[in-house]
Length: 229
Image 1 (cartoon, rainbow, N blue to C red):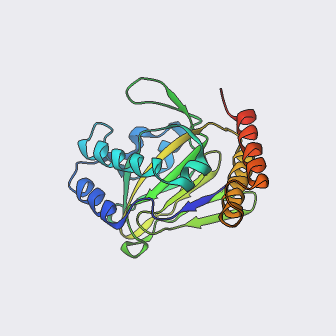
Image 2: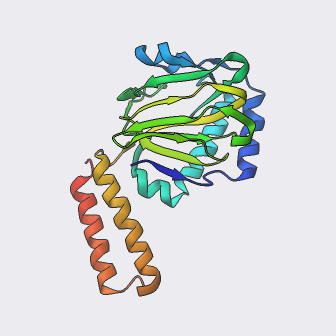
Image 3: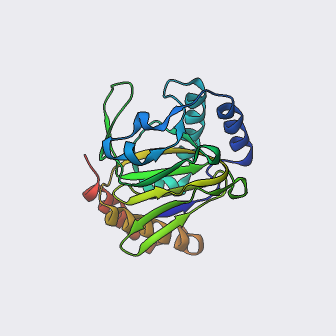
């Protein structure tokens, strides 16, 4: 499943995040790359202990928890603390083909996150830079993604993907990984489709309609069967 989620952050929240990060010190993005990814990764990111990163991460996590589509699609068990990166045309930044690490250890040493889903939350609008498309490959081909500031793209972390070189301007984004309660992508997709269908039918039939009650029970019984304990 590859899903674009619009307006995770409002324009005001994007402006707040940009004001924080543009004035912050940056480091080489290879600091959080795996061995193979480090070869292909050419960008900069905020250090994990940066106060600006912490403030933006708090903003992003609050917005995610309030976004029904994200919660329904990701069914998050854990979210890796959001990171912030930038791709600058002047530096020839880009990120070649790679697959994200299956396991990410939490920076504070408190545990680890299985990376079922990858997410990119755009903090620059498409008019602010050229190039910089996120390209995600699956069995149906390569999909180019370049969204409005505040929009998020969610996709399986198993996917081969890249960020095309930025040729004008700067591309800012937050990126992170999600360990889902349901690790199988096909099962998550079925649950998302069922949840969306139930919500649509309930708008006309009402939440207390017997068929809606039965379908809601089916949804939760499937979630109970498939979710990690």
